Length: 99
Image 1 (cartoon, one colour):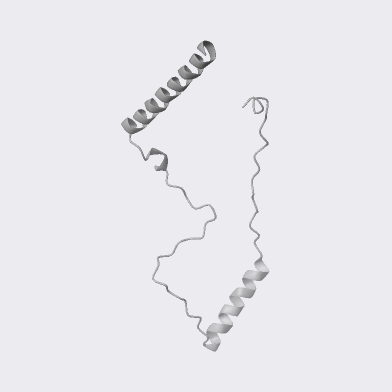
Image 2: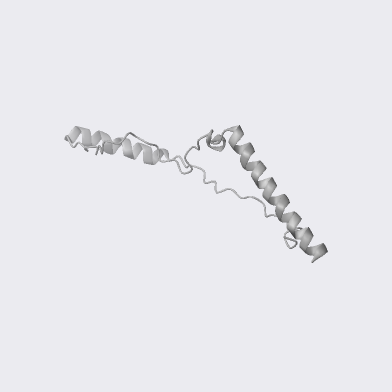
């Protein structure tokens, strides 16, 4: 604990990769799609019965996840932690001064 007292955390870094728009590639894809349609080649989409879910890297978090406990439950757990802390601190003082 004392070693971390003077520790300064490192700067936060972000893993940001900008998306690249390539108009040539988009034009090529459109041409390939048109040629396949003219030739009658149809790519069948595989439907596994699951609804579509975008492949987002971080996914959105549940905004109410931090409020899973009701206020009375959180107050009880906070009071329990405080009581345990006071008891441990009292035992430590007793052992230090009277033992």
